[in-house]
Amino acid sequence: GEDVEQSLFLSVREGDSSVINCTYTDSSSTYLYWYKQEPGAGLQLLTYIFSNMDMKQDQRLTVLLNKKDKHLSLRIADTQTGDSAIYFCAESYSGGGADGLTFGKGTHLIIQP
Amino acid sequence: NAGVTQTPKFQVLKTGQSMTLQCAQDMNHNSMYWYRQDPGMGLRLIYYSASEGTTDKGEVPNGYNVSRLNKREFSLRLESAAPSQTSVYFCASMNRRAFNEKLFFGSGTQLSVL
Image (cartoon, rainbow over all chains, first blue to last red; front, side, top):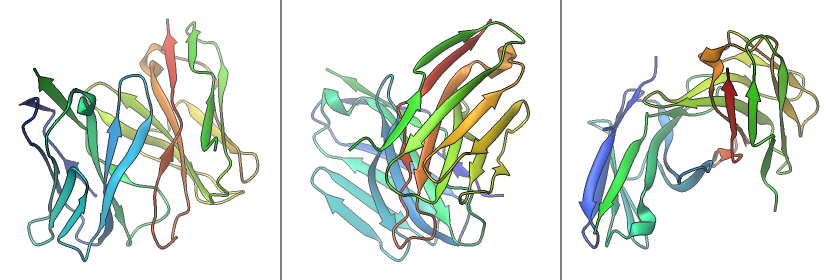
């Protein structure tokens, strides 16, 4: 079945760039997403990329997609303390039914002062 | 805009008790979902409803039942709660097969089963 993998923790210094990586297995993915979860809250859609795109930029966020390697990354420029959260990678696939998105286990982004 | 609303936010149950988690969305979405989130396990799909009148099992359906009451509402029921069901539960909705599919989440229900 479909699988999405991401590392569990990333620690960066405030002001540096954060790069969160994700790999997925389903080559028929149509959209790939990044969700952010702050403590005690639900998941909020941060950004997404269509599978025929290589890159998408939105202010401090840059999403890179390498479809050949099935690798997705999220770069956060000038990381701030407010970026401290869990970041989930997710994919939507066209081959299956209506059972939503497949999520990774989430990467905890830790900001050091 | 309310989006996806879940109730209650917190609940403590004793083993064997039953309860229903309520979820409603006001975005006219056709598909609704229940996930549970556990440390180190990420999000796991319990049940989903592709459209009004249909429900299907997800990855971890045992011990749960669902009802898609109408297009807006999708409830999750624990008939006989077990400690293994201690978790944070999230309801979500989306328009599946829309041009740009986005999943919207409620704020979660923290459930403890003693």
